[in-house]
Image 1: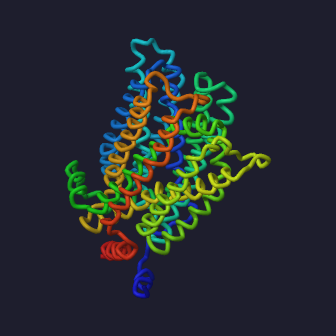
Image 2: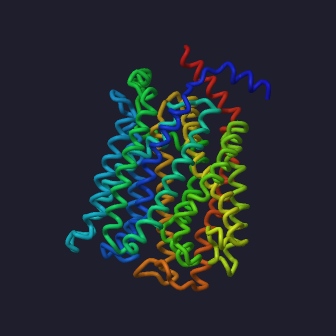
Image 3: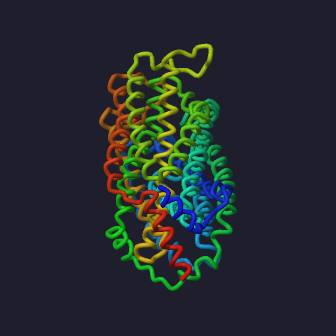
Length: 485
């Protein structure tokens, strides 16, 4: 241990101020605001555009697969970029603009288009949205590489990502469940979607501006002069995937988790859990607010653990804890009085306490496991530069995003398939539907069962991921020596 401390003292890390890490994390938030919005695309397409459950599930799955395919292309372009205006900032700004324009067209005009061209119109506009989304998310996955390589600072991006994404999703859920739905009477009013899109466009643009400010000093043309001569070829994708074992293991660990996260956070699952099983959809909005501070405390403990023991060990620890708390939550959801859960202090009861306790602990574990993989991609990128001499953060981020989005697409398709199997082939479950035994057990399986399966798979993959804290210090020292030669 003392030898490792001495080694850390001799390394001159590419350091960053905390506000730079925090501001750049807003880039991920900007994309996730749109991702939260697109969680309601199935309801819009079903109730407003007249698409059947099977059709919209198939279209969304196909478009999500296209989303994954665009990642290698954009990652390749990013690494080939000469950085005249910075390597990352142009992709951030262009991506946000594309998402804003396409989201407005998608939600405000699709149902007005003649039926005979409605489907191709939807596909084209959605494809434009995906290209913009890919621009911004590839930067989120790769930009960490130039922000900092300090092992005590890099985990902080997980902390800020957790805070901001929690705010984005929690705020979106609260806004929809407790403002838009009561105001417009449910998901069958076009004005609900128009107002929602307006606020997402404004807030995401503001988040992108802050992210550009955060990365500004790091993303300067002079930084990339020594990389101008390196030749990046399409074949490098396959070589990296073959020869860089850490990125393979990280992809495997993260993507099963991603599949599960897509399932349990699906809008339909939320309607089934809060709107049908608990008979109070308003909880879906308030739970993020009520759980925010205690969840943040859990995340803080997780980041401290990552700074002390390294990101890999922290990820393994909180993945295991996530499985444990998920099992406890299953016990709570199996109770007959689950529909009495409330945040009203006058009616607060035992099941409300236990549900809230396990939800907070579980939510903290989810925030850590979902977000810690982002700075770990930067570790894999550093390892690739150490291994092959190539600085390819775009390719590394794109490789990860490609598989990540494929699994997300499979998660969306899985929810649609399950809905079809339990009889929802024309419409999605709606708030206030009768709770049947099949609906109850399906909800518990989707919300609790899939994360457990995903996390167990992640733990198996992480056994073969070798970039621990000691190895990353060795890599940082070697890269520093190369730069001084």
